[in-house]
Length: 216
Image 1 (cartoon, rainbow, N blue to C red):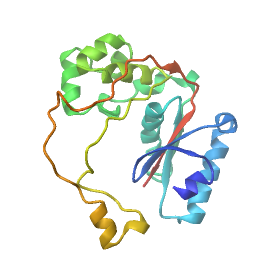
Image 2: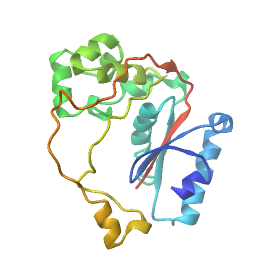
Image 3: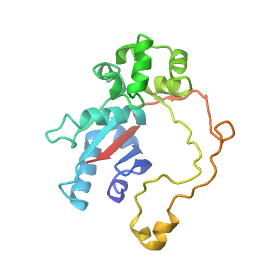
């Protein structure tokens, strides 16, 4: 992450091998130059064997999809680049399968098929309120706005404890650090009383400001 931050500020760390960044004016106009600097810095500081895939698009969701497509587009798998400018879309999306869209697993795909939605193009052309009904919550509507290039940010739900697996930073790799990161078990809070942040505010249209980096 330090190598990435040296080239472009990190917006959100999604997982141990995925993060998002917001592009500045230079990054929007010269994305290839930015990616070349990023990959060069990673190769110099980390090594040639740790490759990265980069997707650039209007929002983090589209950038993630572009990144997944770009992983297969380079000379070496997992070391690709895919840039989707606003005028390029939605054509690249229509070449994908439903399960290529983040958040659509086997169960949701079956639900979409029951709603006569068999392709990404049909999904793209579905009304946002109808997608909310299919998902049975606001997630479907948020996905509609994300696919259409809006800057949509889902609120983070509060968490009561750590997950069962966690990668510790170097300074915490000791007995005391392990104990402090151990999960704390307690009584389960009923879903009806657990605090969950919700928002139905409409997002604003974005101009491909996001890139997603995935280390392989």
